Each structure stands twice: as structure tokens, then as C-alpha cells.
Length: 114
Image 1 (cartoon, one colour):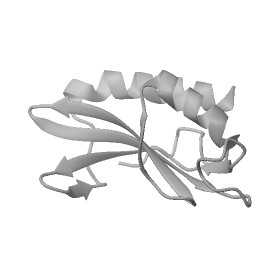
Image 2 (cartoon, helix red, strand yellow):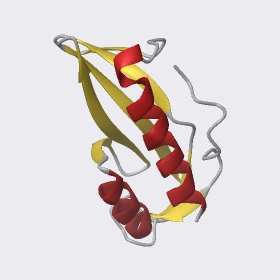
Image 3 (cartoon, one colour):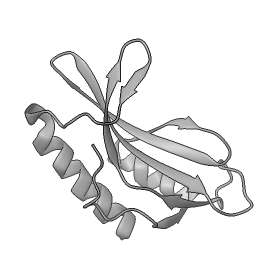
């Protein structure tokens, strides 16, 4: 599920600042290389793992872990994890998680636009 209504797409943040924001919100820098990064926040419902995911790309001449690497942020998505290693990006937010996910999306948007 793509959250197009959340205004994060195109925001630019330096890597050092982004790390602080995302850690404070509970996100983990999971998948990354020197040109892009994915931050994940894990949810579990009915023994199924889901992730609220935010991707960003490096847009200057720095490598990702350099504090001055400039990131351009994408749109948050909600995905379902399939064992052992599959992702369904069309997953809907389960009703049992809807309130938590919506609250976190509001918090994320506010933190990144602040």
C-alpha cells in the first residue's frame, strides 16, 4: 500500500539528520547501499510481519554513511513480509494496526517537514 497522501516525497535531508529523525521515530535503517537507503518499522498482526517502509536516494556526490550525504525522500509504503524472504507491496493495513500506522505516518510527516 502506497501512502500518497503523506507529504514526504521530494523532501531533502542530510543523512546525519535523517538518521536522528528515523531512530527517534523507531525506524531501523535496514536495506542500504551507498546510493540509497530503506528505513523500516516492523509491525506484527496475527503472526504476520508487516513493515512501514520509507526509501530515500543520495542525490549529491557523498556516499550514504557520510553525514553530509543529501537524501531525497520518497513516499512511505506498507508491505507484508512472506517467509523466508518475500515482500508484498500491495498489502493493505490490517484493521488491528490501522490506528498505530496512521499515527506513525502523521508523526513521520511532521518530523520530516519540520
